[in-house]
Amino acid sequence: MEGIGRFTEETFRRLAVAHPEHEFIFFFDRPFDTSFVFAPNVTPVVLFPPARHPFLFLWWFEWSVARALKKYQADVFISPDNFLSLSTSIPTLLVVHDIAFVHFINNDKLINRWYYQYFMPRFLKRANTILTVSEFTKQDIVRHYNIDSKKIAVCYNGCRAEFKPLSTPKVIIEAKQVYIEGVPFFLYVGAVHPRKNVHRLIEAFDAFKKETPSEIQLIICGRFGWLTGEVKTAFEKAAYKKDIIFTGYLADEAVVQLTAAALAFVYVSNFEGFGLPILEAMNCDVPVITANTSSMPEVAGDAALLVNPDSVAEIAAALKKVAFDDTLRLELIEKGRLQRNQFSWDKTADIVYQNILKTVKTTL
Image 1 (cartoon, helix red, strand yellow):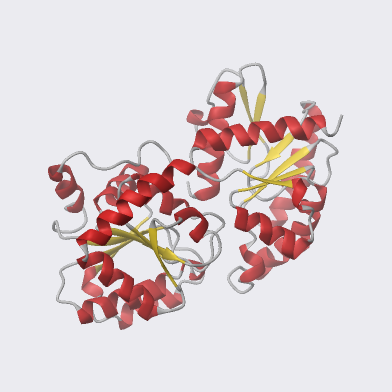
Image 2 (tube, rainbow, N blue to C red; image 1 turned 90 degrees about the vertical axis):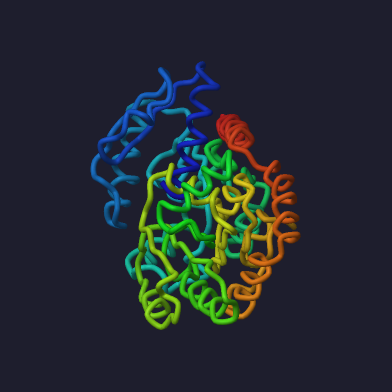
């Protein structure tokens, strides 16, 4: 459950519960967890095949989904994951989280890149309504695909209630001791992938450790994506690799505890459609260091230290500032409390619902 999965779960739970007057048919591409059947007005349907490859995307969307939409006589098709069906005439609302493949053409497998490059302009043209999770992504679509901005609305992301400050110093110490012996740590949460810039974070942390006699460690929490050679190289070259911990993918509860226990959250990705972990850290009263690119300044506002993600020196300097300046940390936390109020899953669900109604009405 990363960004797109979280958006889908949080938004459609609220839609189903808040609107019992509507019937929701959820299409799954494999056996589903019953926890995703949020209310009595949700009908789960498994469509073949399990779609985890571009050829299977084609089969799933252009054949299985199109047939199912006709079978169930759907009034509107809502696709929350960047793709849609070109083979249906049903009014369609498309959620586009980012078009990162346009900016990082070598960070995807060739077959995936072909699929995105060929189908994304067709998806955007076909959709009756488009939602994005940031103003940045909206303008990115307008610039690269010449889509009328009036067709696109911004719904943003929200943060789950589980992300909150830990209750007592004792709980914080206990959370730290799960992976380290109670010492302070910087935290990164997300996929380990070239676009996420984890290799420069490792290099910056190593520079920080060389400059400061500090016991602070770095925890990198997330699954390993494709093309992670740069990360491996940066780690092997690090003089302080013993202070860098890779946890792999963790359950939600562990991620919440680690986030709330961190000295600071560091998210210097090269590109994000939103950057949900930034908001999650703010909700835990944890100061944030993030990149000055794409959507991240939009999400962070003035409540984070913004750095050039290509500059190891800038990232290292920000680590030093937030580690040793108590006043700065408290200031960032306080600003984060204000900034986080701009985003909520309730607001997201309401915007999605209004655009569902708009999509249906404009096609009548």
